[in-house]
Image 1: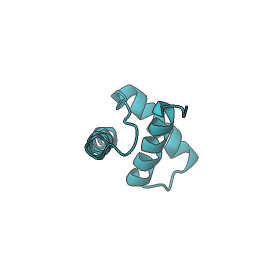
Image 2 (image 1 turned 60 degrees about the vertical axis):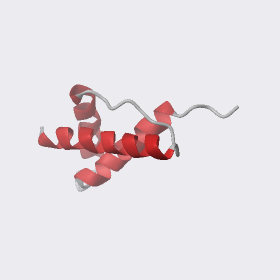
Image 3 (image 1 turned 30 degrees about the vertical axis):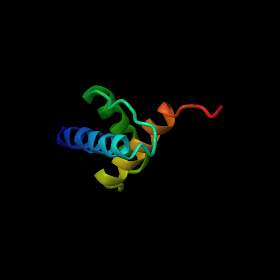
Image 4 (image 1 turned 90 degrees about the horizontal axis):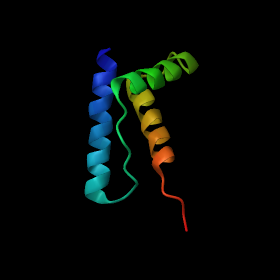
Length: 71
């Protein structure tokens, strides 16, 4: 699926920017299989959502999963 390749690069770019800015936690970019499952879920839940919107939702989900709890 072309979209998953694009999304992996997009997520990698978000990580690179966050690392450079030290603004937010970084996350592990998921494998194609995991990313395809996440994308399928988003497409089922909102079939009219653009690839960019789904990518941003996935980035938010990954950020939440990797967030370091406050002390």
